[in-house]
Length: 155
Image: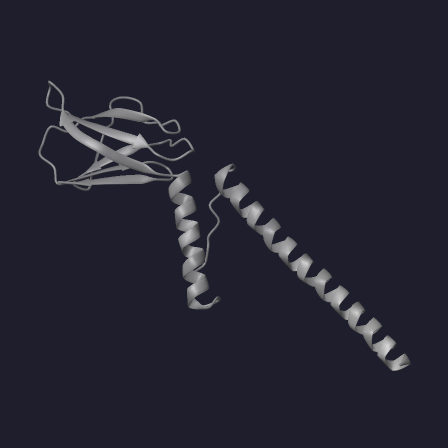
């Protein structure tokens, strides 16, 4: 009877320490995730995320890569809505910042050649803007490239 009581006490202590260890591991993972998301979204630091397929089994690594890409697409996203020409023949590109962070230092590449954006080249969050681009020739590909996002329009 005494052995059973001591066995249950030792089992209880082992379970207690096991729960403490699991709690600390989960807390550490959550803190690392919070720091990663904070640095990514508010401080504009983009840490280099290694390819996770070698470190983590395939289903988990593809899920983590999917989460990272969907998070990035919500934070930083730029799209080209339409293309037209103004009265002097320059390109008018309607572009929208679909992310929740501002986009700065935007420039245009048309047929892989840099073209000048004549008006403001910064986007506020969720802002739609008409970019007037100094390009009077025909085009096949238009790229609007900002510091952290880009949009491509192919004819």
